[in-house]
Image 1 (tube, protein in one colour):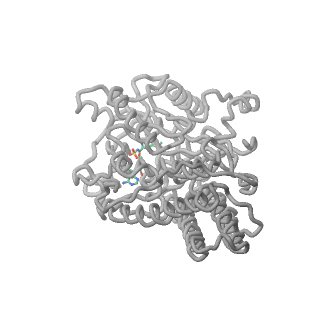
Image 2: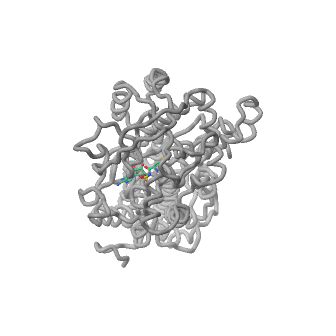
Image 3: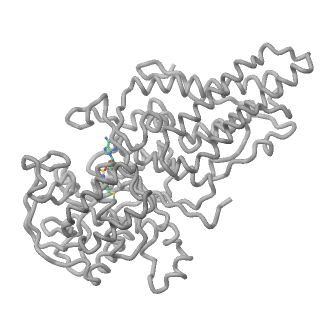
Length: 525
Ligand code: MSP
């Protein structure tokens, strides 16, 4: 049931195509996917955008070093991201490339709008540039002559450049931050942003003349547009800004829903790109007189065994390899369960396999397989009807369900999983304590008790399947398949268990293994 009135727009950062994807990219994307899936389940109209950032000096240099054109590089690498997202079960609505036609037109349109309004003007730039970070830097911000963000060498540049007026919107931005406590999350990041703005904003250089790999300015094709100005606008392109006519606002809105989606915009990003999303981007939107994002959530960074991941250390976790060995759901689960969203985390194979074996294979996998086996053994696959449903279990499930909206709003992914697994173990304990295998089926009272235990547990795993769906959609679908229940996967919704498990309802005979047990080296046994 689509809820016509509710819109939810969620985005990931768009990823540079200078290199193949790594675990950090998987992280941003999986978390946005979880939100998208939860909102769809809750009946929202969801727009979920991800994609690749394909212009700029960094890409041009990388292509040159490989002896191919930047477009060829982008064509090759963007496929790797698409493949990764497919293998991770990412339910994006659009994979945008900044070389897409509609995006190029949108960027040029925005640039022209701001130029004609006087918010963009031509002047001279003299200063420093960090190519790996694609960032302009002032002399005084350098640390030992290097980039303060990544520590790498910077280049001196002096060229004509267009500038975006930032100062003009400083007060408005601070006011927005102040009035919207949900704008910057986690809230501890807010001070960092406010501090930066209060130091005073210099107008931002938004064009370059010394290389070619970028979107040309329609009015002055000596210049290509600064890659971050170009990249941020993907969020406008993806929502259909190109077709949005201010003069004919109301009619057009109804046609393409641009304003509906854009008015409920949620960005998931890494903490390193916070300034771009909470200072430059909102100022671009203020200048365009468009609504500002509802939330920019900055997640932390993954380390590998306590060290920063880097090519030179050779310790970059390749998500494709992890998925090949363990499957997509265990990776999605681990990323979301291991670390409080917003903080840094440490990826270790040891913790990964421990969680896999203990929580996934044992707690969840065994619960489902032994319960379904019992329904088959004692009741021929028919889910018994019983008026005695275990209140403790059902109350826990209902309370958890009622708390979800708030928790997702606060991006409390690990906490949600913690509580779901607490519930899983509650059901495990309930079955152990009830010991159905000891029940005398010839005794009427005991037999009724068995009905109650089986039905209460089946309803519980139906809830569990609903709870885990956004995190582990494949596993949830497998559980539903075995339960003989069709839902979630195609945007269907949670149904009241009593409406499904009616008199005579049969689960499937077929069994699917959820999580094969792993030994410590990671191979399935
Ligand atoms: N192209 C820009 C974003 C433009 S958005 C309009 C960019 N791309 S990126 O490919 O370098 O990084 C994309 C995201 O990956 C960032 O949010 C970054 O924080 C995240 N990660 C990169 N390495 C990471 C880890 N080791 N751990 C977690 N996330 C990290 O920036």
